[in-house]
Length: 245
Image (cartoon, rainbow, N blue to C red; front, side, top):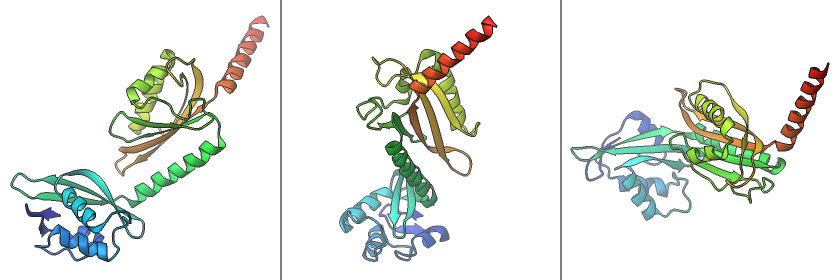
């Protein structure tokens, strides 16, 4: 969609027109406020907690300069709006139907919530695909006071044992680049910088676009200290027995 400096529509292709057909016809010369008001009155926008004036103001700003924001509409549909100002005035706004992506994200969140309740010593994290920030949360049984008090992805690696750090980072990057089918690694990490290292199992699932680019990543870190300690002890005993024989 192409808008002039006064926020009046200059051009809209058929895709955008179809997406917004439930709100109003996108007519050249129409002001953005007219369109939003018509859609609001018809219940097109699924934003129950936002008033008409606030919605008009928000979308009016959104079509000028916007790196990307979702607009939930009736029927569970999510449209993602991005906009960029033009040098000669006005702006160009792009719409993308991200309903399927949001549904998959919500399902993953729901699965994680169920898993947290069923599994002890669990940490859940989310990575947004763009920055180095990890949004980390922990189950009440994780031994981390329900929070893993680190949020920077780079700093997070400081929690990982030096001997395991490079392998963990390498596998994570390979999975982000879609070079391997799954991310499932075991390593030693600290729940706090002064805490002792404990063995953990880290598994993740990626949400990717059609080109294979990672958009978001959801993961779980499970404490496997007891199992790993037993496993290593058994391996040590087996090696000792074999050396004697």
